[in-house]
Image: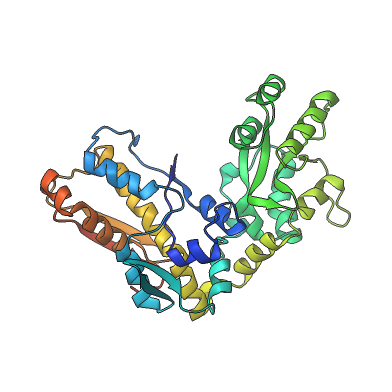
Length: 362
C-alpha cells in the first residue's frame, strides 16, 4: 500500500468555506482529504519518466488542496446551478450562487461510510489481546457508535507522531527514549486541534502485563502533550456500567462538534435526500477525480500504461460519487493539448468502462 497526495476542490469551497486559509478548520480537513492510499500489483516506481506525464502529475498534486480545471468547474456549475462563473478585469472565478447548501457541503467534507459497521471489521484488525474484541465489537459501538471504528489506525508507531508534527520540540531527546517497538494498539489523529488536542492513542493491557517502567510512561505522557496529543489510554478492564478513567478518556475525546458531525453523517446519510446528494457531489466529486487521475498518471510513469497505445480499457467501480468519466475526459483534454500531442503521438484514443454503484448525475 502506497500513500499519495492529490486533491481538487471547487473554487467556491476553497475561497469561501475555507476562506483561502489552509490553517482554518475546513482548510485542514481539505488538506487531510488530499492524502490517500493506493494498492497496486505494480511497485509504482517511476520507470518511464515521460515529460508530459511528469508535468501532469505535478499539476494534479500542486499546492494541496488545489483547484480543478475550468472544464470540471464548468461541468459542476452547469449541472447543479449552485456555483456561478463571474468575470472581472479579464479574470474569472467561481462562487456559490447562495448559501443554501453550505451546511450540507460542510457535512460532506466530514467523510464517513454509513454502510460499514462492527461486523465489517477485518479479522487482521484484531490482535491476540482478549480485550481487543470486547473494545471493538462491544464497548465502542455501544458507548460511542460504530462510526468510530472507521477512524482507528492500528499499530501506529509512536515516533511517527513526532516525525509528522510541525511543533517545536527536541526530537532527538524523544528518539533517545522511544524506539520503533513503541506503538499504539489503536489511535486516532484529528485533522485539526479540538479542545487543544490533536489525537489519542489506545493500548490494550493484558492482565498479566506489569509495567514497572514508570519513568518511561511519564516521559511518553509528557512527550505526547508537547505535540497536543492526549496521554494514551491504557485499557485493562472493560466495564460498561462504570468505565474506569482510561476508558473514559476514549469516550470524552469524542465530546465535540467534529465527532457529532461524523455521527450525524453515519446515522443520517446525506445521500438520502436530493440536497445532501448534490452537496456530496459538489464537495467530493472533484476530490475523487483527482485520485482517479493520480492513479492513472502514476501507472503511466511506472510503465503499466503505455502512452503510445491506441486505446486503454479502464474499469471503475463507483460506490458513492461519480468521478471516472470526468476524470478521464479532463485528463484526455490535458494530454491532447497541442504541445502534448506533438511530443506524445498516439494518445488520442482512451476507451473506458464505468460500473456505477451509486447515483450518476453527470
